[in-house]
Length: 234
Image (cartoon, rainbow, N blue to C red; front, side, top):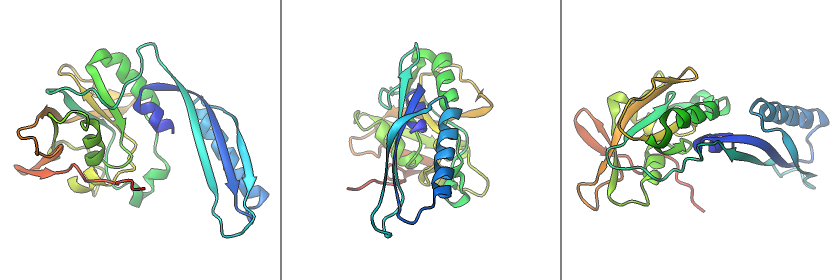
């Protein structure tokens, strides 16, 4: 939820938490859970102000938690995931790939401060932004979905990858929770709050109507990356 707020360059205000506890959960375990929630919420200035608590009647039901973070726009307004334009730079914060296998998906830093600063520094040049939860390929494709004339072209050698990660994993693994941005041509900050900001490609006009929404150029070969990542299915 906090990363979703960062994706719009918002400022967290408060949190609501509802939880259904399994029958065998001890009081100590429940207190540990809620203390961790409260600590995280307070750290990002989104104190828990309400919610609901219940217990399962049977032992085979898992712990269930539902969290909502309320937020507000800064004076510059929110940033949508849509709005990219041909010629925009494609940029990403931090490093990509291997989050699930390494455990980083449980210890990532929501880029709230970085997003607010990007909005302030880039102003109207920041055309669109999303947080990378499902994978760079599929999330980038979602950003250009409303405009069939646009294509995201990524350069494999420019991707900021974690150690031991190849470009395909960096594009498809997901759970990175870094920011993916479309930015108008111009000067780009190298870092925001000690977090690297890396240009990794460009938004262009599609050569053909059936061209992939996202391609990765690796060793001179174009690879369709539009579907690389986690696809939610009902």
